[in-house]
Length: 298
Image (tube, rainbow, N blue to C red; front, side, top):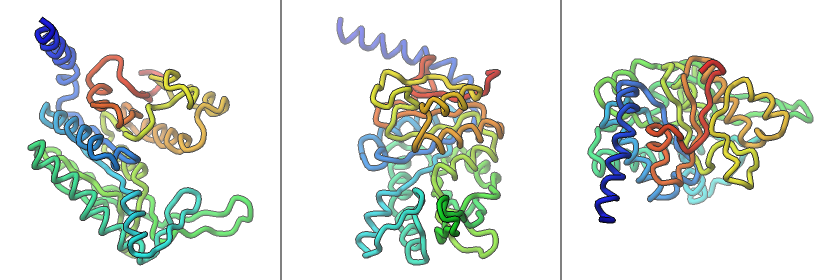
């Protein structure tokens, strides 16, 4: 009887997902994965199984990935010391060569191999320098006013959405690397993966943008996982910043989410990739498991 109850529960889960599957079929969802999720083979495998399921039920998934830790290891092997300024990796000519090698031929290739061979869905590389035109990131030291130079680090100014749409319309999962080509010099640039995902989502005005990392979502108390804010409306963002709830590394993340929604993305989700099948639970259940950010009217 215990086994039968388990089978019935599984069937009930599938039945609960049906209206969501019907609603999202044909919609575009951009999923960005990074952090320690990329470092755990098991967490990455479970995430890719969720993405394969979504593609199988008719959702057009665009996967954007980072690769910071893999790049850092490769740079260490090459004897290149890491250099970060205000959280961004300084990328000189030698470093950008390492970034390209690792991100395209190691990280991207591993994801493609699993999706195609293990989960039997059609996935292909869509390198960022094929679709993202960027301008060089510059800045000033907040204390001295001195100019800051990160080298070949760019921010998107144009997106070739046609290339993405052609792949998703053909049933292919584009697996996008966070790279771009300079608008002025035509050279390869490193792009923050969150920024690349937001640029794609904005340009395509997608149904959902999902950030998968190693945090449960937005917490009122970072030391209390039970303080998860399951729904965040844009009108409450300023108040939460003033209260110090949105702070530190979550500040640029939430600002990117707000920017995406204001540009026409319907929903943005922050979820924990360490939780088994968190992507499916967030998309296909009423309660969800992370933080959903949306307009005040929704």
